[in-house]
Amino acid sequence: MKDRFIADLMTNDDFIGFFMIKQIAIKTGSNRKAYLDLTLGDRTGEISAKKWDISDEEYQTLSKYKPGDFIKVKAVVTEWNQMKQLRITKIRMANPEDPWELADFIKTAPEPPEEMLAYITEQARSISDMELRELCLLNLNINHEKLIYYPAASKNHHSERSGLLWHIKRMLMSGIALCDIYTNLDRDWVICGVILHDIEKLTEIESDENGISPGYSFEGNMLGHIVQGVKLLDRQMSELDFPEEKKIMVEHMILAHHCEPEYGSPKRPLFPEAELLHHLDDLDAKMYDMEDALEKTQPGEFSERVWTLHNRRLYRPKKD
Ligand SMILES: [Fe+2]
Ligand SMILES: [Fe+2]
Image (cartoon, helix red, strand yellow):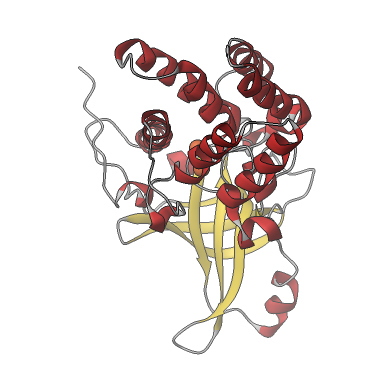
């Protein structure tokens, strides 16, 4: 196992460590010299890193590095914009003989994926509307294999192995609990909306079986999971002979789940279950990002800026 994890790095640390490349680009600095701009990751998080003033010789080697590669670096931890950053002085590809293992780099949801999928399937089976139930079970069945390992994002919330299942499971638990409080809600629609809302993340994002994502697919970049989801479900519901109103309502739930046009939803929610779906989604993403940021923060201190949370720095209380 490697001995230095991103979450434990402190400013001014001068160290040698192993990382996985998440993003990589060679750019030109204001001094007109080439530099390497990286996002590095391990199972505890991500950190931005730079290697300044690359020589022509280094350029040849470094231009072959790609996301997913494992590297060994010698670096100093600096701070820029209240975020930690690595200034790399030496870099090479990691060897299998080096002291690191794959498990150092794989972040995974806290519950076994088979159990999460069983819970989600059980809720789908409990839907009393036959058509909605069939639609949910169809999608859970055909995507069974991918659901086991897929992350819910390539960066940020739930970007971990089985992150999509974890996201769906917690949203289902919250949604079902809220149906007992807001008795105007139809439980069938809530369950169906939660299970299907992000289903096309399975094609929007690319991922290997460790839940490590190099980014978006071509279709994902061009269309995104909302439009992809509406297309897929439209086809499935036509094949299943859904009545027109029900079909449009399912499509509306997918379409409106990000609520704001700037987040990809062309319509805001127009019925209570669609409104709830948006809040469940937003709540789960925010809670995840908060928990994640505070795990990397010492008691009595503020976290680094979290851009998905309006660049806030969160506070972790002192232990008593
Ligand atoms: Fe979404
Ligand atoms: Fe979501």
